[in-house]
Every structure is written in structure tokens, then in C-alpha cells.
Image (cartoon, rainbow, N blue to C red):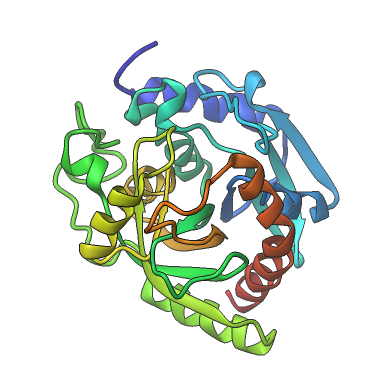
Amino acid sequence: MSEFVTLEMIDEAVSAIRSQTDREPKIGLILGSGLGDLAESVSPADHIHYSKIPNWPQSTIVGHKGRLVIGDLEDQPVLIMQGRAHYYEGYPMTLVGFPVRVMIRLGIEVLVVTNAAGAVNPDYEPGDVMLINDHISLVAMTGLNPLRGPNIDEFGERFPDMSQQYNPDLLKTARAAAKEKKISVREGVYICLAGPSFESPADLRFLRGIGVDAVGMSTVPEVITAHHGGIKVLGMSGISNKANLDGSTVTTHEEVLEAGKILVPKMDAIIRGVINKL
């Protein structure tokens, strides 16, 4: 497994995808744990399993079907990743960002990234939707940055600015879509940790102290990669479990998947509203 991604690797994947679909979507979506059912409403659709795409990292986690769904959503062509790969599955961080670079080469201009996240903010409840207005890239700060290695100039500059990686206009559009659908949303800061272990109560108290509202094990590498490549990003977290700041509860992956059943209708409505307004 190569640690660094090359343009040749990316274009090999692009060619394989283009050989299996004639569609040319401009909107991409990445769906997290328990949230993949949104892709089932895309019709008609081309389905491409990740195993059919060269160099593409495979999903191994329950709740991630591991395929691309390319078709129409709200009368607009979209490309949906139904599941993602994570750093904790054993992939280099550069390869975690690989699918986003493929999307960019395919012509994607807007990326909607979703995840299931644990509450750090004690006011958050399971079933809440949080619009991500910023993130803390702790794993990238400590060296696990998806842009590490030779810069691919075709995507962006060596030292990209990250001050507005969550597009303000898309955030405004998402707020309006949620209001129209009468869905209450939170807004806050997301942090990606390496995983796969869930956080200890002391971890969560530390994260709360540095301004985190929700925590997960994905999204940030994809957003860094997307922003480097010049595409607009909207991020949303589905809150799957209550903050365990005192150690009184136990967090499980089954709990995360169960919360997805509540979150999918809300996130589905907001995403459709955003797509309609683009």
C-alpha cells in the first residue's frame, strides 16, 4: 500500500468510474455510519462497488455499504459515497482523502459531508443535527495530515488556507433549508480523533475545554482535501450519543447505528433542501 497518492493513481480511479457511468454530477455526498439510507432514494442510479475502483480504500465497518451511488436526487445528478474508509482501519491518512480527490477530478464542485458523532457539548441530545461551522484538526496537527507528501499542484497550493473550509454560503443555505422543513439544528465545532476506541470521560472533558461540540473519527481529512482542491464543503454531524463526561454511560457502535434511524429523515430533508437551492 503506497503511503502517498499520485495523480496517476487518482486518474486510474477516475477512468474506472467513468467506464461504469455516463453521468456527470457536480454535487458529491459522503454518508457516515447509519446514514447511508439516503442513497437508496436516488433513482435511477448506477452502483459501483469500491472493490471495482482501482486504489480506492475499502470500507470494513458495519453500516458502510462501500459503494458509489450515482444518479438523480431532487432532479440534480449527484455522486454519493455510501460509506467511507477511516484511518483506524489501517489506511494512510493520504489514502483516506483519496476519494475526494477522485471526486474533484470527476468534476464535483460541491461536497456535502455527513457523519455520526458523539456529543461533547452537554446540551446536545441524541438525534440532534449539528451544522459544522469549524473543526479542530487534532490528528493533522500531530502529523496525520491528508496533504502530507509531495504536493499535487493540479489540486492546489502547498500551504492552503483553512479559515473557511466550511463554506459560509452553504451554511446559510442549510440553515434556510432546515427552517423551511421546521427542523431545529445546532451549529458547532467538530473534532476528528484517530479511533477506533471511543473517548474516555477525561478525553471528553479535555475536548470540551478546548471548544469542541461533537467528536467523531472521520470528515476532517476529507474536508481538508476538498478545501485544498477548491471545492465548496457543507458538513453535518448527526449526534448519536449523549456526552459521557462523568463516565456514567457506555458508548457502543450499535447505539450509533440506532440513532441513524432518527437522524436520516432530518438530514435527508436538509440535504434535499440544500440541493434544491443550489
